[in-house]
Image (cartoon, rainbow, N blue to C red; front, side, top):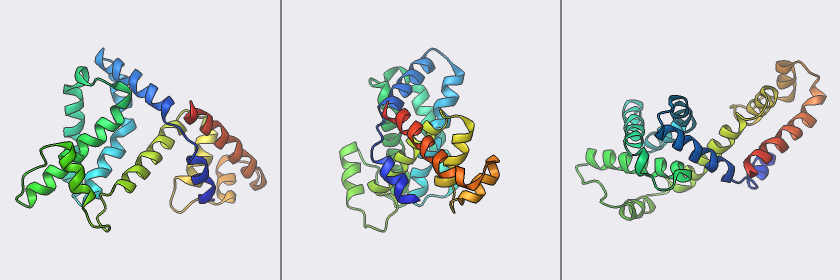
Length: 201
């Protein structure tokens, strides 16, 4: 089951969601509180995971999460590419996380993004804050965001099969939505096609 979902993810494009990001950011600039809540809800999982993957405790990760979104709020009018707000949030979270990690070691924080990326690239493989992990997190985030655009039944089917650990069986999914187990495979396929269409823009 998992390999099929990963093959589908390889064809996904973030363009449509980037357009959504730009629209949300522009609405935030106009004081739209709902747009702000949507933006925070869309990216808080990704931002919170960055300090956690660096080994920081939940309390410090929560502080960094608040600092990142506070900084975003303060700089709403300064972001030149609203469609790239996801990348801005990731980079800002990395900076703040790396600053805390280095501060705890009695070292100065990186002065530039290039310096930070160089240090991150030199980390040992077992360190959790590696780029591959972040790419995977962002891909998962894109899928979760697009999933919310589907009808409720498709959301439930795909979430139970692909986004829960351990994955639900077809029988469990069928029982949850009230259909026969043999109906789940074609339903899953149709829902994946709808999800792919959303992500492809």
